[in-house]
Amino acid sequence: MAELPEAELARSLLVALRTDFAEREATALQLAELLLDAIAAALPLTRNQPADAPLSQFETLAEQVDVFAWEGAPGWDVVLQQGLAPREPLPPNPSVLDGLGTQSGRAQVRGELKRRARAEADRLIAAARQAGPQASGLRHRDTEATHDSGGPVPALSGSALVEVHASLLRLVGCACVSSLVLLPEDPQAGALPSSSSEALLREMDERGENFAASHEEWLALLLKRNPAAAQAPAFRTFYAGLSQSLRVALALREFRDAALEGVLFPDCEALLGAPGTWQPARWSSLRKGAPAIWFAELCPAAPAEEPLRRLARECSAGLDLFSRLWFAQDLSLTGFTALAAFLVARCACAVALWEELGGGVAAH
Image (tube, rainbow, N blue to C red; front, side, top):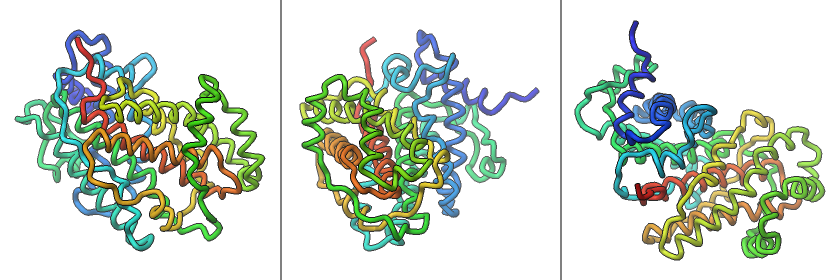
């Protein structure tokens, strides 16, 4: 009987994992499944085929980027710290969000977002192929994709595996915000709340450890302050995922502060919770297109900065987004889902940059 593609790829991936890593085989299989799906979604983008369906596929992969499975892989944060073979920092790639707001309208934003997704898909495929001779191959589930892609993908080194994962995170970031320009614009979208980052940080300080446990209080405040949310039955389903961003916000602050001090925060587990809880299929009725001016406000051009300053700025942008959600008043449902999408995308980009810079490397 022929070996399943995921089992064959898992054998190839074992070389990127430490031999003394207890969950080595389970992690290799989980990564193989994820990589197969990512390549299948990326290949149409590299061939300049319509981008809408591949972006939708990448959005469904958001829940899997933490590489966690019950009774299986322990999670990407643990793999980085304990499981990967020795690796070196990688050249940091650009954020998929910075500068999107410099486009003049929704059509231009949409075109630029697709261009960036295609460029990132090229990087993902290149990273999957860079490890040398194609000895133990990967046959894609899509036979046409296998033929067009030029053959099997080789086994990955530790650094190459990080490069693939970082690229996947950025593609997930693209995908999460893509619906805002792929869906028709909501004429009742209204305005976004102003940034309240400083007020948010003060409240975090005042609440201390209780901040992350403020789920019920936050929900009650949002329903009281936002009539559209109170009237939409699907809002509570949406909030089930949004409530996890309380913990994410604390992690964004820790990542930012560490980067400003010139170091990398040691653990990405909390930040990976943002894409890990992104389930828009559960509240699809709330999704609509957003005005181009929101991209101008939330995705301005970024200054040229050294990588750690870039990481700090990415995290600051995430805190800005969360502050608008935390204090939201009279916000439309489109505003809620758009801010949440941008927050997930910023977290994905922050983790991608962090791991490229060597985040998660632990002494053995």
